[in-house]
Image (cartoon, rainbow, N blue to C red; front, side, top):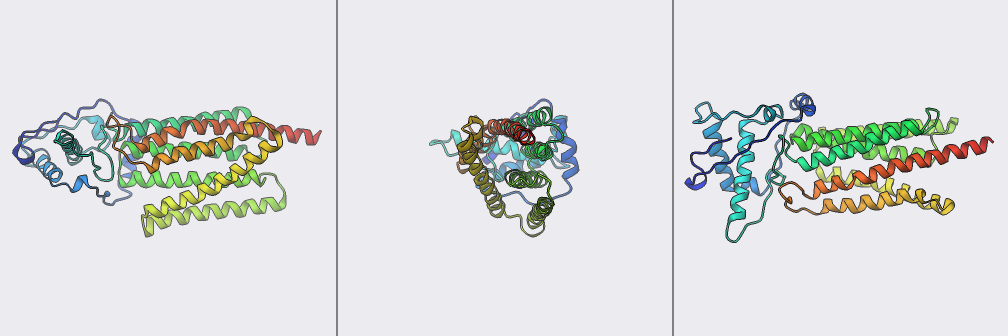
Length: 348
């Protein structure tokens, strides 16, 4: 527990920040990446409050310096997740100030610190709900990979693209879970780059499936190579711009929305056309998934203080993408089975 002998405006404060074990699975990645990137955290209204700054200053003076009055040990599970004395002070003061604002008369609104709401951490995780739901999305892709391997023979031309889709999804949600466990510049960038790769790969394999670039002919093979090179080049340019030129949140959002919109339009057209011709319920699933994702994305437009210091709009957006991912893999299996059955009929 961090100890305060005096606090804001001379009043006595104390707060317990005790949590049990840790997420060992992310420790090596955090240690490896923590030295790769550096940069300041985004400023918010909360971390500009004079009382917050005073609280942090007092805490660090009394707990962190060489001549500190108290040397409060940080539990091992938090040290493994790179919690330091200053970051412990920052976390503690966020909750001291938040509690004071809520207890004021009249109550004052909860504010963000460093671009984030003051979540209550769990097992050293800064945003436990987002971590949990990111792992839920990881499982949806893991389960999808198992379905692909179980139902699609190696000879099926789209199988390798769907297997890659599942791996891209698992990597993306792994980095999402790591970022929400501990927010550093390194983990933020890895999360953004993985998400960008996932969105672009979605467009990549959509074009291959819808325009049948997977079927081997000399012309299609040339087009596929050109399409692959174009997507790789676009992704490298995207990462280079963000990393070497400008870490621009607005550009990153616009780029992902543009690519996602094209992908959604293609699958919506495919879904409508396939259902119109076949009248099979599963043919409409891409349209259902697109609509579901659009509704879930609307949560990102909201920004409210976390319910129970855990559930905010962003975590609910992650929750909302689990079921569509499961339905999507079910569609890919149905589509592949229908595709293979059609090929057999043509051969017959």
